[in-house]
Image 1 (cartoon, rainbow, N blue to C red):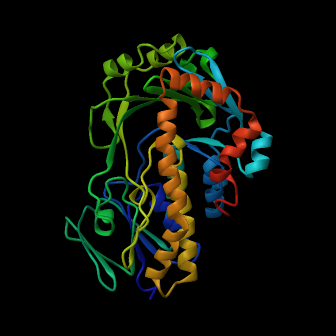
Image 2: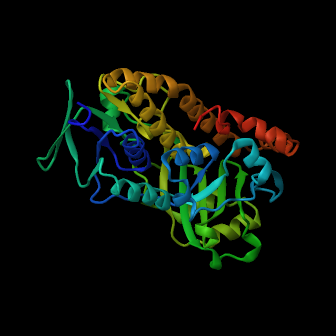
Image 3: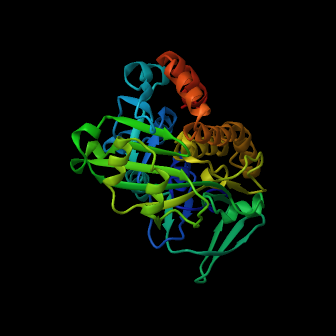
Length: 393
């Protein structure tokens, strides 16, 4: 039955392609159905912790994906109001010895292209674009009907269709995502256009009063990634909207000179509204299950969205390998293994957002606490997320 009826994967982003590749490794055919006219990934840089690298290794893609990655020397927290360096987590040999894999900075499009190229080479993966789904029909199998009259049949459906997942509404039915009240502006520029004094082989986060700025290198250091986040009641659905530079600069008006100088380098920003959802325990219904942001969308403050989606793909494929003849049982086993870990990421991402954006006495307390931390204490605080025991390869 598995060979006759492939699994349908709705969504051709990082999670959907990772799921297809993980399933191909156990000889399960899939059809990946993407709404856009072509497979692609919007956005700029993303951070992959050791757990994300471990997932890529399981897929056999860590070498390809990391050719254009950057391995920072440290993760730095700066106070954006005073310009003072508060703490840093070294990510060199000691970090890699503890967590087995490096911390990596990579362009989202580069990671997506690596997954897509691997999928194109697989005889077990069919890639479909320009397919807007009108109907999802459940039964002993699953049928998808598109707006242009196409029909796709599969033994099951994996909803990897993101934050605004249609599949999720069939399974969970919890309506629209939760709008955080935070907006992110992103920009990428040639590193050569940035003064030497601002360049570091590091991920640097400038935390301030209801805002923060992140900077780090991409593509071997040729590109300079900036992400500015601040509190706002403006709202626009989607991830790729032209930003309001005037509002951005107003929200960073009290930041230090270095932050102001970095922001001044950008004359065109892209904006997205940060949303998540409450953690849920059930992601599956009969022969339909969810993956990645469709299952557990989270704010970006832990830099774990892509990592968790790739972890999902690996764990799901293992569950299916153990229960090939009972996909609903495999889906239940998969979600039992994942919901607490991803739920913790969802909750802790919210906590970190408040931590980064603290002001007044709260900011002073944050800085005192962080500045007193040793590298060993910082590593211990990351064990739950990065240790091999948390996500075995």
